[in-house]
Length: 463
Image (tube, rainbow, N blue to C red; front, side):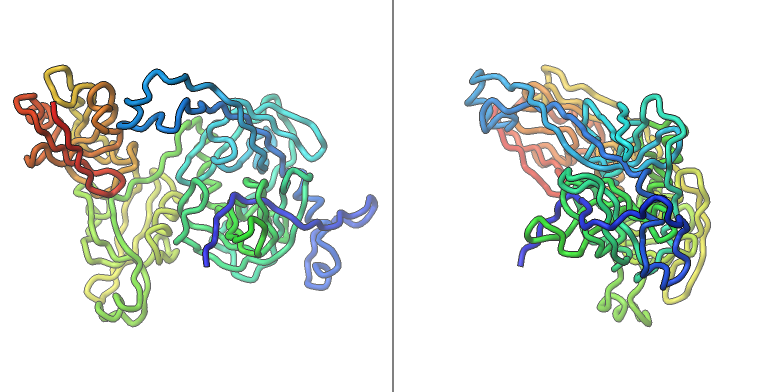
């Protein structure tokens, strides 16, 4: 049975309270059973509709952009710009017009228009966007005194809590659906543009309302609706929302003027401990994340952790998957202290470390390869943690040369930005200098081994 992931939207209406009715938030189960209307009336004005326009380049032929076959179609037509529109939702989180939505709604937009529930419209600009988290923060131009949703600590949420999903499904207008939190810590899915750690809900969510609000019965934001799991494209009662704690970290950074989300760097590779691993390690139950590799610059290594240790919690919040570790670190934020509880040889221990950005050391030593190199047109740098983060490479790569630009002959043979050059004609590459020294055109047949998206790729060519 095959399932498909769609961007989120909310559906199924709830009646609004008529003017003059009591507007208190329900305090008891009987009051909740009577009506959600007071909560909706309090929260709905802070949920907005977002209309975004993106300019994309249409390909002149089906092989445009292909490093090999486009050579045979060179000069056949030109790519033309094409306008594409998208519809989504957002949540006002500050009265001065700070709005949170999904990256896949506004991340590449050239023009953004936001409409409030009272039909007022504002132009908006993106302050901070991050594809991996699928979150974006917008600023409405000229906005003041707007209704805003308070954020709740998403670590306090429990399975079974009543929630409301608010948004604009299929462009039909603002709609509210009710349900419960049906799961927490969903971290094995790559959803939309993002990957990470999600709240699961059975509140009806449908395509077209990505970026809408998931709120509790007190009207507090607990998550940003992002995607659904479905066979048909409609809601099957399995929706996912990005937790409010990560949203709060984005808001904090956007408020300081950051234009790129600063994610704490861990320098750790690990895997969740399953039942078989727990038995092999003599653990009473499967829990935590076992460290399988550590970068030499990793703050976890500096704090005393080693390969084979099992990370149990960060600041007393459990960590049962690598995605959960990354979520916890991103929510805590750069510059903050974190307490790590871990297992070593069956015994518990604790360590304290300070979270920071990926260090830009050793020096990058950038080299541009000229006409005297068989990789003419490429630019390579020394791998360090900052380079790994920028190129989205595995965090534990400790040495080598990464490609940051590829043009000319290098692009024609298939070399791409983000490739890591591992060897040239069987000789290992450990630095940019090695690439320069090993690519003099003194022979005809060449084999360049690169690491690309976790796989080894051989580029074979003759000159």
